[in-house]
Length: 298
Image 1 (tube, one colour):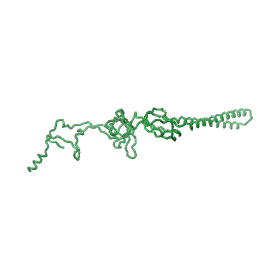
Image 2 (tube, helix red, strand yellow):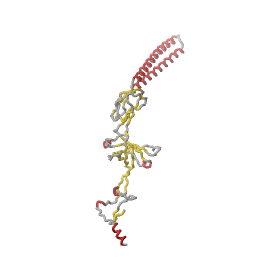
Image 3 (cartoon, one colour):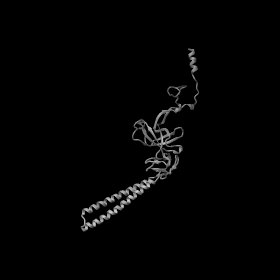
Image 4 (spheres, one colour):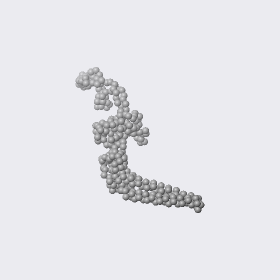
């Protein structure tokens, strides 16, 4: 018994606790957060494609170069297209000449019918020929317009302001219709597409704020929920949520495709709480140390 008492006194540790080391347990306003992660993407992006087939010429832009809306970025060789324009225009001229011939024949037949030299049936036939000639001329004019439109399509222009993200072909290559030439992105307006589990998506509302961090850095970004998809994804059942990044200047290196993670502020709750650093995790379950009189309890 004496050995047990002495062992208990030996195991008893005397600690001096400064007043500043004791935190009063009180009700606090805690922010509830929904963890999210996703990739940054440009709100506006464009893929410049070839609208006519031919040899690519004049492409000098490369990844990272800036472009403006309406700027000519490349051209398609116009040799074949100009020949088609001339062919279509000549067909329209021939059709117009045929209209003139049919018109004179109809006028003559109309005079002959008035004099009784030919029957009204012959006049109806010449009228039908005139109508057919006019229709052929209109079709030829439309064909010439299509050919001129194809000629205009040989000039490739950027539809938006931005930077070249990808160059997919080289000068001298023969490209097909709808071949991808350049990808342009506008980095002045970025957003994050995050997938939120269906159980937590019910707490997300348009206008809620979020704090995000670029993977591998400590710099924070402020974002705001601007859109919520009306349907969940078929496989994961997660709901896509889109957040607009507010302070783009806080991280100049932000680019399309980089990964960010953070939390969406989903409201506040009043609860008894202590600072997170007061919770100890050196045992199986987390615990806090409580001063009870002259002793410390777990």
